[in-house]
Each structure stands twice: as C-alpha cells, then as structure tokens.
Image (cartoon, rainbow, N blue to C red):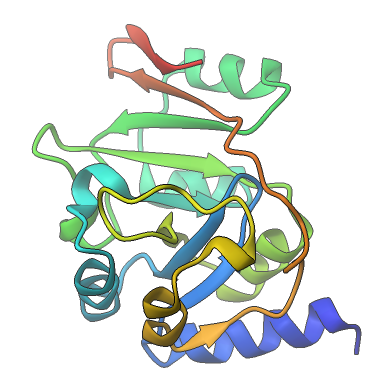
Length: 189
C-alpha cells in the first residue's frame, strides 16, 4: 500500500470513529471531520475557537456527493465550476444532510470540489462530505506549511496526516456566493 493509501486509510478510520484530522488540502492545511457529525464539529470549534457557520466549508469530490447536500444547484454554479482554473469555493442556499452547526443564519453553506489526490481518495472512502476549516485558532494567521501550525492545533487533533509536510500551500482560491435565483457575488477573487 502506498503512503497516500495508508494515510487515507488511517484518516478514514479516525473520522469514522468521530475524530478530527489535520491534513493538507488543495489550498491550506485544514482540520476536518465528517460533515454530518455534530460532536466532531464541536471538537473543531473548541480547538479553533471559530464560529464554523462562517469559517468552515465542506469538501466534496463528485457531482453525486454535491447533490446529497444541495437539492437545487443553479446552472451558474456548474458554469463557474467548469470555467474555474483554480480551487473555487461556492456558497449555495439550503444545504441538507450536514450538521446544522455548519449552516449559516442565511441557510447557506460553502463547498469546494477537490482534485488534490489525498482529499479526493479520502472523500471516495468516506462517501460523504468532509467539514473543514483552516488549521489555526481564530484570529491567527493561516499556516502555509506544516511547520507554521501551532503545537496546540497539532496536539488537539486525533490524527495528523503524514503527507506533504514540506509543501508550501497557497490559499489561492475564489469564493463566490450564489443565490437560488442564480444571482451571484464574488466574495474573494
């Protein structure tokens, strides 16, 4: 089994049992858990001191998974995803099948379809979305590499994925909010 497959297996076992993981995503180092597990999400909230309704998104790896969370997906969302050359977070209305603590007061939730191999394979194994927030305490800087992650974050998770610790990750992603009527607003270019 390759290192990546071992890490996917280990991370999956932790998540399946309600744990939280520290992992490299396609944009930043993140802390993640099963997006439907309120207790695991509460662990992340306590560790990061973040309000996850605005500081967390869900990662998914397929259209099929996307439809489990959003029943109605505006056509403009598909167009943006098709045209995006870099990771893009879309915020859509009326999510379902995720923990209520992830859903904003406006009844919306951000998501990103991932291509990064570790995340993609983990989601394939989970068969459900991964809730994620950046690996920092609220108000602190986003770590671009593993060595910038604070010891309290590393000690506070149930599993640290042992991949790409040397890689510098860049938070070069767009954030676009799309209303059910297809109106959209670019929140971050």
